[in-house]
Image 1 (tube, rainbow, N blue to C red):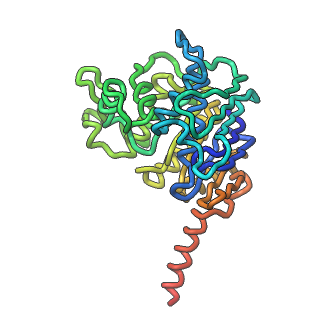
Image 2 (cartoon, rainbow, N blue to C red; image 1 turned 180 degrees about the vertical axis):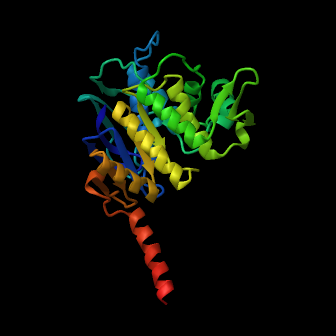
Image 3 (cartoon, helix red, strand yellow; image 1 turned 90 degrees about the vertical axis):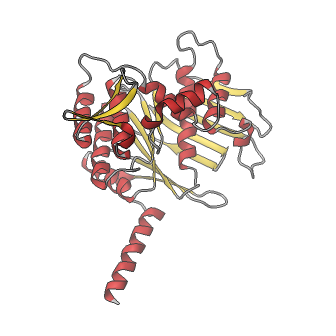
Length: 340
């Protein structure tokens, strides 16, 4: 489990020190505060650790990390990731089961990272990033854009995801919690999403009917992605899942069901990092934390010059934050209108 992250001068992340991370971890903040940036920073570190010494890959950690940063953040040079106002180098450190992985580089860095420390062991598990936009209807476009044309546009989170989805589903007995979660996901979907090898397309199956994935609801496709990654065993206990805006395109009741499934998977050993600006997500995770006596660390990022950072735990209740404050403001405005 990833249990600590420190980030300094990493784009909008001026000074982040987030400790005691758990099975579910939530990032909130205004637009542009660095929520997705923090998710991607964690993802690039985890994928570097996982790809290093896997199979016949002979690349060094520095080479893997530089490539992941370049194709994930898609900057002209990775030195552009250093905070504009910073006079010091970018520094990022994560702790994985108390083993440190850290690196540092300055603004002039092109594609070579000189300072890297890695205490972690080769990792056989997979991390995955689920972006806010769905990928199933763009499946072939993403592959062609990145693997054939080598163009910016779809970053590495999209490419890694479609490659993971391309793996065939495995038969046989799955983990009990995974099987139960897949049944729950299917219930939310009211059908199944599968890749048809003959037509080379993703299809939504409802009873005896089949629908092209392009005309299927966005929320259906988002949930289907998690189901597919459980079905082909790309995800297993000790995998880490990063989800940007889990609420995107989902009805509030589906958000609630989706987060219940995430909580079950977290209890089975998966670790989740969620970035959100939804009141429903915060409130539901707070209820899960209390009902299951589960610690759910929360980091709130604020758009200030020094970037104020607030650390809380949803097990202690919903803390004061801009998302809740805006919900209260709208409620008070409505009451004032009713009362005249």
